[in-house]
Image (cartoon, rainbow, N blue to C red; front, side, top):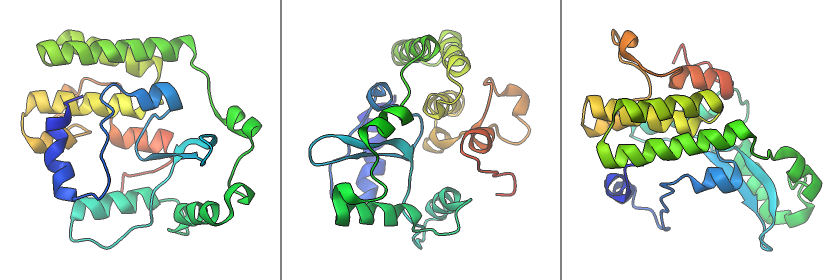
Length: 212
């Protein structure tokens, strides 16, 4: 929601060898059902979805960045084989449609979820929150629309994490605040949302971060 200029320093620091696309209006959610990151969609050479949006990440790689180490370790919790998702991708690349991980069209449809009225209303409230945040800054009206989006579609972690970031940055406008996803110690009573990152991870991702 902050726009390209907010992300540019992070992207440039990563020195990617591919284009970085910014989904400011959450079209990946509207079109493909992406409700958190990282999630992965498999699309074959013919443009067919062969696996809908699902959790997926590479195996942990040693790095000097402690935050990157934490993220890799986080995404590997609950798995006994760190290369589990990479192995699936490699199997698909080698075998194509014959890969055991490729779903039939019927299975893809069965695993996808059409938008209910609540989900559609949640998207509308999130769009309104974004509009007012961009025009007026973080306000009680923005918070109201975030709250409605979170209540109507609680499993959409992307909606929640964007709100956490926007509120934290409005409270403490520095780059570190953009990554704040939970209340700071002693500030729990000021947290205005129905949930926070660690509770979301436990409930919707099955990750207990209480010891992390």
